[in-house]
Amino acid sequence: MTGDETLSGVAPHSTEFLASVAARELAGRRRVFAGVGLPTLAVDLARRTTNPDVELVYESGVVGAHPEAMAEGIADSVLVSGAEAMLGMDALFGYVLQGGNVDVGFLGAAQVDRVGNLNTGLIGDWDRPTVRLPGSGGACDIIASAEEIVVVLRRHDPQALPSEVDFCTSPSPVRARQEAGFHQPSGFGVAAVITPLGILRRPDRYGELELAAVHPGVGVDEVRAATGWPLRLASDVAETPRPSTEEVRLLREEIDTVRLYLR
Amino acid sequence: MSGSKVTTLADAVATYVRDGMTVALEGFGHLIPFAAGHEIIRQRRRGLTMCRMTPDILTDQLLIAGCVDRLVASFFASGSAGSLHEIRRRVEHHDPKPLETEEYSHYGMYCRYEAGAKRLPFQPLLSYVGSDLPRLNPRIRAVESPYGEGTVYVVPPLNPDVTIVHAQRADARGNVQMWGITGAQAPAAYAAARVIVTVEEIVDPDVVRADPNRTLIPAHAVDAVVPVPGGAHPSYAQGCYDRDSAFYREWTPISRDREAAVAWIDEWIHGTAGHEEYLAKLGRQRWAGLQVAPAPSGSVSYGRRKA
Image 1 (spheres, rainbow over the protein chains, first blue to last red):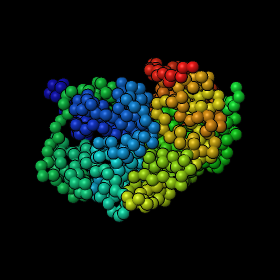
Image 2: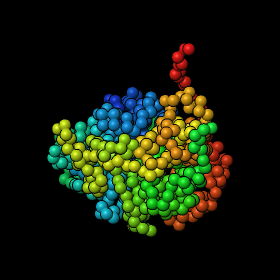
Image 3: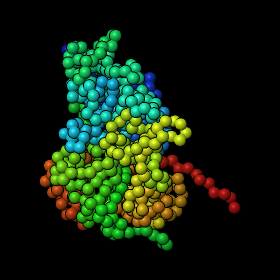
Image 4: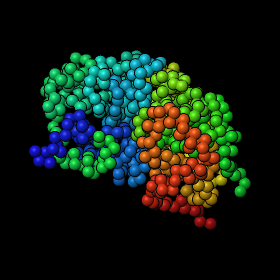
């Protein structure tokens, strides 16, 4: 195997693989609201490959970021220097997000369930949780108003993908609709979940996630066994294309040169 | 000059921050008022309700020091450094005692300050429909639109006894100028009964008045102005110095071990007389590593009417 083939042969659970898959999800999208961690890598890669014109929006108030170095967090000074606009939070959350100007919200979660509810709040008992997670941040606001949501998960097992979340921080339209009489949020909710095993998609606003693609070397049965509900298959389950050698090179040599997120 | 509100950090905290108060320390990953928080620790305030959108390391430190009994917030981790272990110990294991929390989303928390600043009884937002957050936090309630658009969730006003913020500069009367990420500082200031502002530098009023659009909090909303260069460390002040990311990484193992965290507070906060001594202890070399290259804004002309 040559060096180049080794690059594109990174394992499907590697950060390089997940970030490359996530970057491709952003092709053709205009305005992306990016969270911390892996989404940072993916939007940076998308800007250099699939989508040079993507407008990066961060909850800290940055609109149209042009960072000269990889951002360590959504409030990093490199996102501010050279940005197209710095807005106050009223404008960012109120006008940009709730006003319906974000195409894709890019989120992480501890749990995603069958209909795309997200848990970033707690695992276990509400009053005395086993694990206290970071909470909503902007996620509950983003899922309501971004046109759609892409989630990246670092693990794929029945705990991370349960039939129903332990706590719903950021709701699917399926759950929102159960609150009769409420002004319904405009967002589609979770459209895609990228995991170390494959890609789940939710084609219908009020439907459930189904398996749309498996990563190379991963079997459909393996994904179903690792999912907390009887996972439906899309009519045509594809195999995820490997990252290109150029994508992996960019991530390692130009984007995350200090290996902050690449582990 | 007349109307100067310039004072020392020790005096400002002694005067305005009392045991049992509700205190907002705002700054969204940027301009976090660390020096002021550390002074609250030094003066051993107790029983505070702390309000912060993103608690960050500062909240972990105030909790370890025993200053805070209640936390009102919208994120319970450090932006890039992961878990805040004192918060987790308090919530998950009630160790050394339980922590009362009141939880919102970011926009919900922001709307609380907005309602507080505007003296509104509540503020609506389109978040929370279908979420468990209103069940966890009964202060998030619902109101039917009188205009027939359905029911929406609302949040109550947040009116702190004191709001403390850090900024790049202010004049002596307290016209506060800041740039970069400006978070919830302006509504949090207007919502509060008292406002303390720490700044990198006190500037001449002419500097402020040459660029009035950059004033985010006017002097009429400010009670005390304190020059505290480096007052946001280990967070940053855009254009002045960068975030001490190494500190954030170093905090994780300290925070994980309660004894180490208590020892850190003793050594770095109680063991220093004030922020100058804290910075001196940090060392010149470390500070030099946080310096940034200049990137001045273009200037605009406000014009003057000809006589």
